[in-house]
Amino acid sequence: MSDPKKLFIKTYGCQMNVYDSERMGSALVAGGYVEVDSPEHADLVILNTCHIREKAAEKVYSDLGRLRPLRQAKAAAGGRMTIAVAGCVAQAEGAEIVRRQPLVDLVVGPQAYHRLPAMVARNADTGVAEVDTEFPEEDKFDHLPEAPRARRAPAAFLTVQEGCDKFCAFCVVPYTRGSEVSRPAAKVLAEARALVARGVVEITLLGQNVNAYHGAGPDGEWGLARLIRELARIEGLERLRYTTSHPNDMADDLIAAHGDEPKLMPYLHLPVQAGSDRVLKAMNRRHTVESYLRVIERVRATRPDIAISGDFITGFPGETEADFQATLALVREVRYASAYSFRYSPRPGTPAATAEQVPEEEKADRLARLQALLSEQQAEFQAACIGRTLSVLIEKPGRHPGQMAGRSPYLQAVHLDCDPGLTGRIVAAEITSAGPNSLAGRQIGA
Ligand code: SAH
Ligand code: SF4
Ligand code: F3S
Image 1 (cartoon, rainbow, N blue to C red):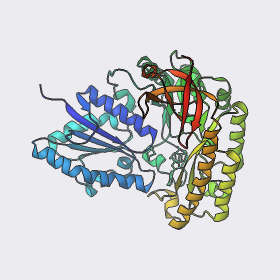
Image 2 (cartoon, rainbow, N blue to C red):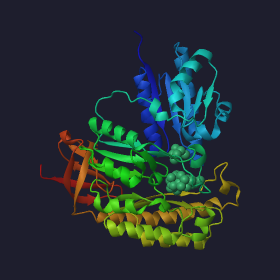
Image 3 (tube, rainbow, N blue to C red):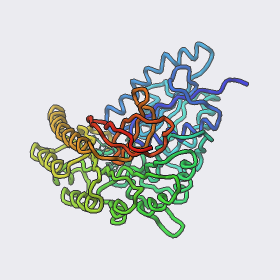
């Protein structure tokens, strides 16, 4: 018997790509590959790419360039390295990728992953590059079998919804992931049970617009709140999260679930992008500052300690200093526990890309000022945890011997000394100190 073929996957971008990479990896492992953690000597390299900002997309081409000598070395040794570009750059650029970088053998969009094994086989036969960026009718996840792997890490992602119909003026997602599709509830529940059977205790439900979930259920359509409540009944599943949400889809029953579903963690990632109604309108966000703040207020009324996180863009076309000041004012009002912020990056094919641009220095200067304020708020949230007792899901060894790392209900990294045998268990920890990105604590009780 020959050695199994080696597979290397590199993942860029969002959690949905992380999930997709896991599913592609499992399917290929079930087909005889072994996953390795370096592209050297790999028979198949998959770059699972992101197109959200220019930097992310360009990184792919520099990484492809670095694969050239590895591929040549493999060929010199009588082997062949097949190179596949998957993900959102694949969807957005298609065959253009092969023209720009002839090293690439396969280009496969996010909805065509189940066709990857057949594409690899055809390409091995013909040597001709394969491109598949279709949005087929069938559900790719039905055709991506999970490899019967041993135990899983205690926290896992589960995609329940994909695509987006919102068309924010800056965003490529509706083009790269297509229109909004929800997976049927029964499939989500079955996958969650299978994860729990393999040791998973925390599941993060994923979707580009996850709170717009409207999957087919046994008794009609289910929203996200209903799905969460049914998932919460699975014994052994202790924690549920979901991301990313749109402010307009925070339904009443979802807000209510934050108040009375103990397994739903007190953390909400709710991007706002900007704090000026004029800019929000130009962004086609379809919500106002006021409506966003009202959602936050209602969520906090049901779950006062909830950690709020957000996404921001600085320097969207037309944004003035006064608009930007309004963003700072919104941040001061909300008080974020954590946040992601970016300078606006014009993306080909999106409406805002052709509008008159804010100068780069201005975008960068606003971003720096925004990030200074957000860091201050994050530090305050972290510091406020000192002295509290938090439940921590132990996930993996920490940096120092004897130390383990886990997550608090608020998604903070927590380091504490404890028995490595507690991996996958939730322990009570008294928080003793706080850094900008993690907490340290002491285990309480056994
Ligand atoms: N579905 C999510 C997030 C999608 S992308 C939502 O609706 O919010 C993640 C974040 O990237 C966005 O929230 C936005 O802040 C940022 N982003 C998207 N397009 C961008 C662009 N062209 N330039 C800069 N940041 C962008
Ligand atoms: Fe992009 Fe999110 Fe807007 Fe959809 S709602 S277009 S994913 S930013
Ligand atoms: Fe990037 Fe696509 Fe996710 S563009 S952020 S990988 S949906």
